[in-house]
Image (tube, rainbow, N blue to C red; front, side):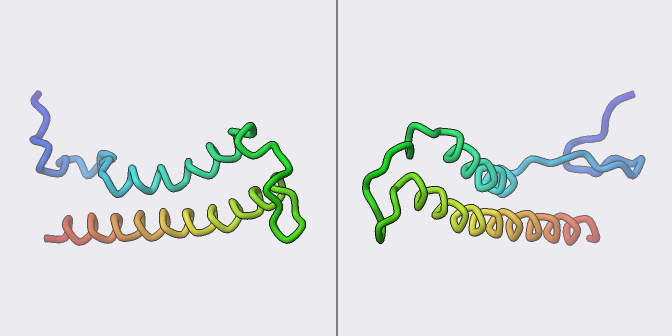
Length: 91
């Protein structure tokens, strides 16, 4: 048996995962904080200080805020992608 062309949905009702640029961007947004925190040599120092707080601490606290923003961006991207896919399937 031959498989249906990629442009047509499978006839058995199953949906194949589709990797698109927005989903890759969302994945990068989620992976970036992990990479930044796992690369300890980049922030294992005391200077520069910020309002008396050593760099080691304020850098990590900054990533809490940055991670929240990146997670929100990834969520919005995935939700828009899901809505676009559902809208395209109803036609």
